[in-house]
Length: 263
Image (cartoon, rainbow, N blue to C red; front, side, top):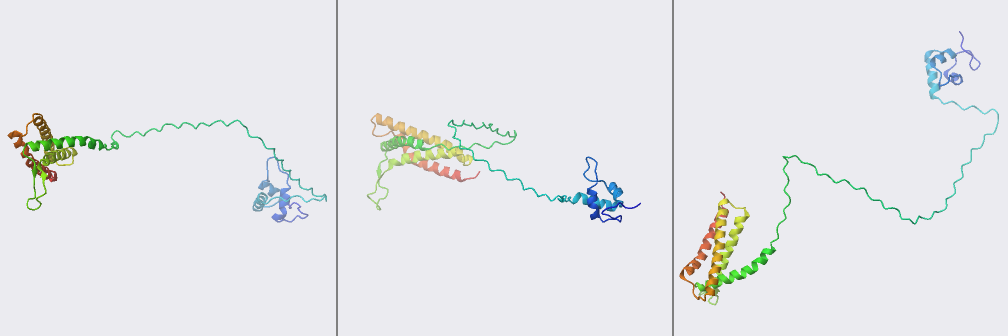
């Protein structure tokens, strides 16, 4: 068996010379390249050389056929002309419809576990200026009542610094409203604050209630004596009023001691 004549010779041809003949083979419909078996059969070559030729067919592009007629190459198609600019369009006087934004769904609060502790809500502090407004008329009435009762029970002008400052004098009746009412307000604060030991809290509670009750009785006594035209209080009222400064001193010292204890 002899090799087919390719390029005018029957000797085995190199792959580069077989490549144009392989491209010129007639192929069945639907096939882009000949099979390796057909290349082996057509060109009388072995399987390795046929495989190499098939690979070159798939990877090497085909050269365009040379123009042997001598016809002039047609000029490329002219570029399309640019379209003319459209005339300006007057804007539509009709206003554009308003676009209503979509309604967002209501955010659902996450549901916590039943055993999860709920954080406490922030607590706003109450204003205190109404207390000052209420305290002004009460201070005037209480001060005048205690000073007037002190005058009926022997309290009056004294010279606390004899031999040192003889001209200095003070009305000792002011010790009654300062001592009794100030202690009552302080004991009430200690009782309601809740930041003291239990013994101090109990003592502050009962002493605050007692101070407020004594203050009310003092005001009642003064107004009754004043309305009756009495210029000197009975001995039992004088005795009770005279003991008030000493009682206030003792209760204040006891409360200060109990507040500082840790039980």
